[in-house]
Image (spheres, rainbow, N blue to C red):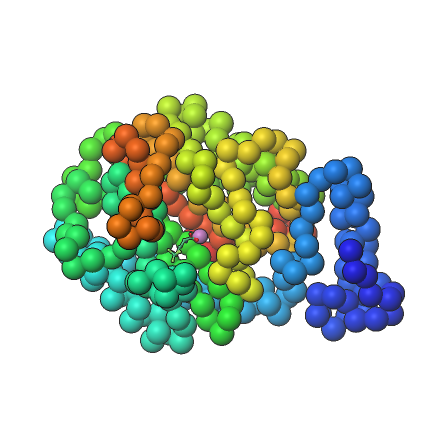
Length: 290
Ligand code: MF3
Ligand code: CO
């Protein structure tokens, strides 16, 4: 670990002296590291100014999802959702983070029924009665990133699909209860996995959440099938997503061969996902985007 002198400026760029800023914090982290735990690198710890910028980015993300929730309905195409996302994001001064991200062709991911995630909006995909759809919105505002997603039920959705959607949503609260400084991401992941299995569903293993804020995807990679007391130490100033993908049937998935993006359940059964972006604070957590 690179440490400044006690009277030098802190590495977090707060402008404060190291001894008055992250000096005690670093000592505490080193103790966990000595015990063999995975600890966060300095590069993913945000200062107050950066957190404020990320909150501004999230205002756009939330506004976009609010608009979608008011206007989504049977008969529209997923390309229509993509246009809403692009237009509102850019009108508010942001850029949709997915657009051209590693070649992703659209501004938002729209994943219906047996699609787990990374569905690509299209004029040919029309929402129909009984569909469940995840709309996953991510924003870049002046280089600060936000990311959250919600599920929408179109028309008359079956009771069993509704229960899947609600369980996916509730699992976020179960995970959030475990988010606190000096706990472990595995506490959160294992709580979610236990809750989902108690409800008779499966959590997708291969696709997880991620750190976010100064980049779209930062360390750590976040699993929701992890073990208590394992994975990265959570510390104040860390921001990551909680976004477990929950399958009604088996956990196995596959990637679309043609577009190399869209992920489906192997057994063809439905999958649901809600996503929030969370900041670890001195006392617990703050939801940044939902
Ligand atoms: N929220 C999704 C994620 O973090 C968004 C992916 S955008 C894509 O995985 F461009 F990568 F598809
Ligand atoms: Co994400």
